[in-house]
Length: 496
Length: 124
Image 1: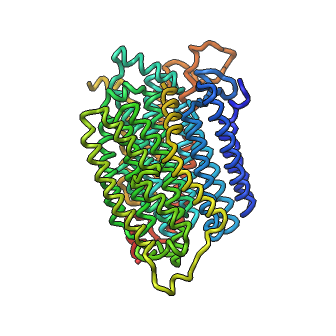
Image 2: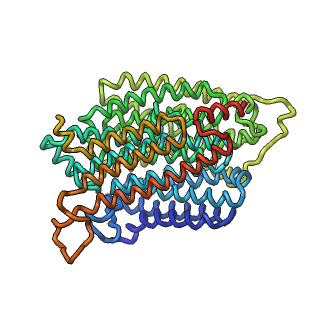
Image 3: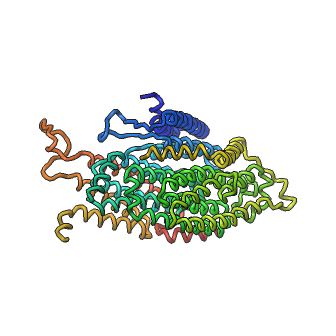
């Protein structure tokens, strides 16, 4: 085995251990360690991606050299490596983007704790992406939940505690359902490793045994992960959790944490239950129906919001709906579109949360959209960043969001029963997105009173870099989407 | 039908307990009761696993008296899963309790509805 095959395991371990170490470090040291480890993880994941792309095959890494069915495994294909690289990259940029805010708002001690949660979360997200064992996935789901809760409650105010509690309650319900689903699946199939389970499930389906338990398993696992990723109607915790946390936390929670659960769901659909079994059950139609509601009602919620952070949070509800719509189409093309949208939304929503923070700083720390008048002039880069993010999610050509909307539309044409509905939903949602995003962009570029104009605010080097790179990523996803979509297709083909 | 239920008594019990726990976690207003619900829910899953992993007439999967025959012991994996799960649920419970303490210190109540109402009032 090549040395590079160790890299996924190393990256998980490095982030977990550095998390433990940062809890005893203070302020800047913890920050430097966290950023450095994140950088290392990006390099390791990129090397893994290059390796799997060059061999064109996925590989399985056995922990402690115990082979299946006893040992624990990591499996790496193109899709896993691409997602890991992209997610760790987005995480680094989100941290850099919110750095100024972090250092201002948290004392030395809390900063250490913040990076403890951050690194723990990075490790958990990587583990969820790579793992080949379904019970390991459950354990890391819980670690991810705990770390996410830590990121929310680090601010220590009343509303933040309320938001964290509500997040935990919903999240724990989701993981409870996932756990009982996994337990039933284990008792029915007798395995925990994904390929072995899939084999057993295929056999059981052929023989026509355990039909109802398997259906229950699919429902429980899908419902659990849907609740955790905040699919409508389980989104009630989202606005408060994203709205009250620090900008880096909101960016990471909305861009990465909820997506890691969706990634796990996609993996389970292909590698555990098997695509044909899922298609045979009606759960995919239910997901599709919920996603349609999520897209429309999320956007309506965003229009009604007067707080820019809440608006972004409700927009996440709609975007999660898009991802589930791709899954709900039930076709390969739909899944590719969903995966691409995961990448686009991770880059875009993080950009929006961080730029919104810049705009609010330039307007005397208010988050009310009406009071952000002229903020685009006072903090130019934040204004440009917000505009790029907004245009991307509205689906204007040149930006990443346009490509994902096109992909959803093209994927829908394969299914004559859903095509009309998908087209109508995309059209309505584009219109609704345009209403709230363009409205906000117009407000931030409406010249304010002369006295306001002098209050220029600097974002700091880290913030500027983050916004510039995020905006560039949006353009790259929009202009050169070919390689990304190619890699996703290759990755999904490797799943089967 | 009834025979079926009686035969799988543990499974039926654990599913009922899971439902009770889930309902308590979701519907109770009191935070401590919510946490109790969470624990009932998790414990139900462990009962399910432990019951399914048990084979009548076999011992715990620890080699005793030098007996190494496979059919003398039960499958150790479900027990291992239960142990892992217990660790997870303990840490989650600890976190929830810590959050509850924080909330109580801020709002002097354990009633989630009251806390949310008070928070909204303070915001205005």
